[in-house]
Image (cartoon, rainbow over all chains, first blue to last red; front, side):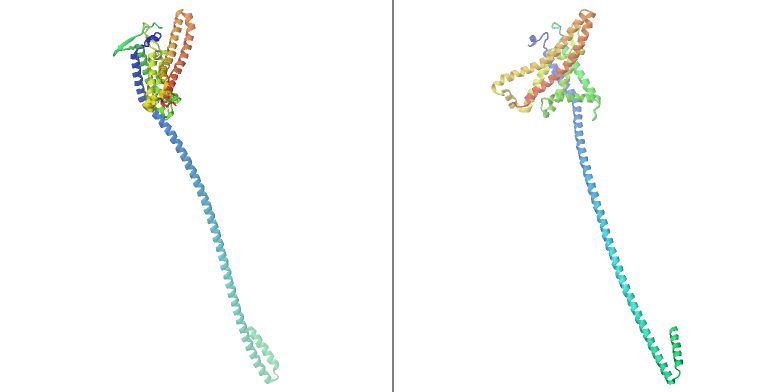
Length: 171
Length: 239
């Protein structure tokens, strides 16, 4: 049909059929041996790479989140520590004030007691001394009265008085 | 060359050219071997053979992506890959092996130096394009594309199908056939006057072989590129 158009070539239509069959067979074999497995592998690789990228992105955000958490925890613990320290400080302050007040009241009480004691003691001493003076006066008076009756024994009276006074002091 | 005898045989009432059948089988076996041995031990981290095969697949997919939209490339990937491999090996085969009978009838040569082979592939491309158009757009929209931009365009649209078919097949045939013919002519020159012409002709022959190698690769690339263009034209509704 077309053969007269070709320079020195003849067309053989069987060849056409042969090439079509060969080509289809070749396509089938290529698909089974190479195309299928290789494209699958390429697809798998592409998937894996995109997965890896995704998981890398995920772990990056995870790490960022962890860093944030850690920083928050750090800040938290720092403020907690500050609270603890300030609490301790106020506690100490309070305790100190308490102790000081306690001590002051104690001292006050002790001072008052001591003053009371001293007053008591003084009163006792005073009353003792008064008693002594009264006794002494009575004694002196009785001795003076005795001597006046005798008249001239004044010297002896004074001496004995003095002697008695000295004895009084010694006792 | 035009008066070279051709070896033929009859099978199922059809005439076959021995050269085409044998060369086609050689190409077939070569591709199966390449594809088989490069696809052993596939791994996530590719080794030599797998790297080569993946590079080839990426390459042919890249050709298709040039004109077909990304969503449809996957459907034509295998076809583009096999077509490119077949045409490339076919183009280069005749540059390395040329076997002829004692009478001068070729047995092994580039299958693509025969128009029946190239026109077969061209016809396959046209059929794939038609099929893809119907598959993508449905019968109605596919065939109304022939009436666009206006109804009187119909004869031109139909004529265009034939010219696409012929130019696609004959371009590659012309380049490969002429390349091989020139190789033969240079060889005839080489043996015509003994040593003197041999010394001159052999470097020319080598240069031409290298150039034909380049042309064969280019033609395989162009064939697949144009095929994908023709298919992509059928995949979209013309405005």
